[in-house]
Image (tube, rainbow, N blue to C red; front, side, top):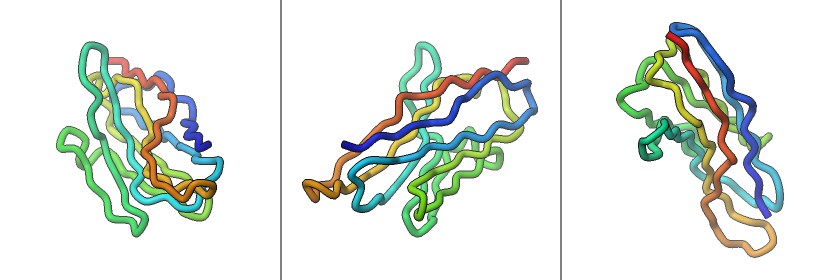
Length: 121
């Protein structure tokens, strides 16, 4: 089994900052792309940012310049530094990873349980 566990989100004022982390654990042989998605009430889940194992990053247009994604391959962790928060950033944030399992040697896509981030005006 593979588990992705996000750190707690929370309440942040507009203009403030928040850092999320996500730890992957379990029968992991390797991890390729990791990413963060978010889902606001009444909206579809959308990509926020992604990062390859080699460190190449991709950001959604609404968050470019305000968010930085990074990872620690040795610790199987991915981070999301969010600055200049806006009320529109309020959503549940989900960690995602492409993981090769050590036991069955197959690749799978896994999700964390999500963490709520609320940005107050």
